[in-house]
Length: 216
Ligand code: GRF
Image (cartoon, helix red, strand yellow):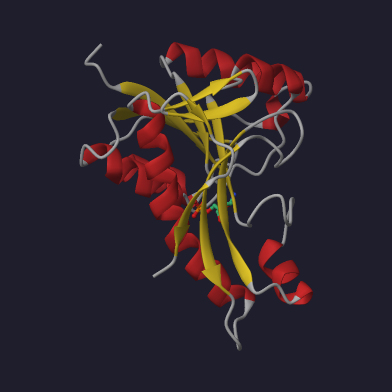
């Protein structure tokens, strides 16, 4: 052990958050080592990008497992073989089974493109526009069995502007994601962020309200 936390990133698509995390670890902003990038999609662009960086990668295909629980079990086996001590979901478009979530409880983070608890689920940018929300953003949270509902750590927040579209919002939200996700993983790796009895703790204090990063 070199004193840095081995962590894994699970992706299904482009992997821009994974790349932001890899860069932060490489720069020493995260006291951690990206031990493996795992995808459920063999052709995920992020997988190719990870390989180009020389990162270890693996594919775990749901179709090759009998059910959700078997898929989760295969993921856990692989993660433990790689020594992962934190599992970071970054655009992983698959619901993980309760057994997986319980096994990794307190060591499993997700990023969601809305200001949770608003707009759980998909199509968040569209729903923000339809609802006329004045604000939007992204949330890093610990994962629990209820989708997009675990204890919140940090949110990136921006003002919705006249003329914003799903595309412009998505681009601005992603910029914030690339700031807040490395920050949260860095806190965890440095021992500042932890899970205690279902509560997110920062420096041994319960996070009563999320840390907020406002867009410049
Ligand atoms: C991000 O917007 C994240 O909030 C959501 O999926 C997207 C993943 O983007 N969960 P990328 O693959 O990291 O570029």
